[in-house]
Length: 454
Image 1 (cartoon, rainbow, N blue to C red):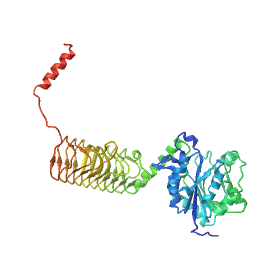
Image 2: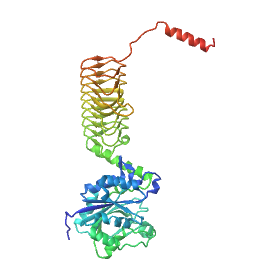
Image 3: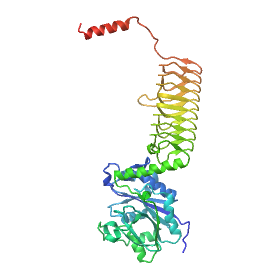
Image 4: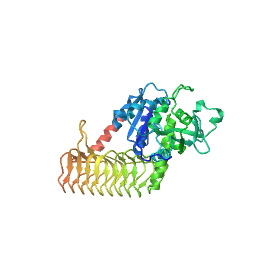
């Protein structure tokens, strides 16, 4: 038979594991992949699939995880598993959060952040095609501790078994269960209520519902995912391995879309990094979250960008740092050892070396000399500095905010500017130079006598 293609969807995300092998004070699912908490990747997938309800099962031992989920989805999305008695028990803990829901329930794991919505759609497609329970399988190069799936000639699941309970013959099977599955809400909880814990761990296994469903004559089928996509994270080494896969995939996607990367293996990307076709990224660039780079821009080597926008044809670096709120205009230059934070830099403006620009704006065509500092903080509050269009800020100028340098104005090198500078004016804020003739010669002679002990 053919199922209804538009039935409602809900998702249960299992996030109650203790993650003891991580050996970290940070809960496992709050570690990051691509600059985003692992659990948020799972929530992203559920939302992308159109799940109208999402329940995240957390452990009583992890209040930080509970807080994180509640902040994103609300308290109603949190289900607590206490005590932890296995994956089947965890899904049952989510039942109150799904009260009244009548549709398909998807179960995914919070520690497998690489699973995409496109892959999981195959599971729903199997449900639409008539499978009572649909799951996600993969062919493992080294099956190890993964649960095995035994399939019939027609691809239907005949049996699922955990590695700890498998026979030698079953351990030789390479078709493994990712744990991802979808089933009608009523059927899912009906089967879970029948699951026992007569196994090596004394726990209620979610995969046991497969055998119960098959025993009732129901159809159980699986779609297949790439093994890398279902990689779980249980240790720091596995976290690094997943991060590596994430990075390689994101680089490949961007290069396929027209981004030039001179040495892609050295570039670090985040989950939301947006780089337009025609942009160039040199080696050893880090894109922290919140960065957008437009066409024709060039990000030179050893630069670090976070929460910043780089407009068309802008040149960044080498060794530049863009912090949150930096907005670099078209054709602008931010050079080596320049840091920009919460500043709009206008079209064609330049700060080519050794400067700190924090809080304010730089007008189109302005030039910021080497050693310039926006003195934006008095120890308690932040203040803004605004440099007008076509202004020229001399080298080693300290602009003490709040202050404005007018359009076309100049500041003399080495100045400390504490008052607004009118447009087209020259501002000098430094002590007048005096020369004491012979002072240096006398100083050296005195120091030489002191060294000689005279």
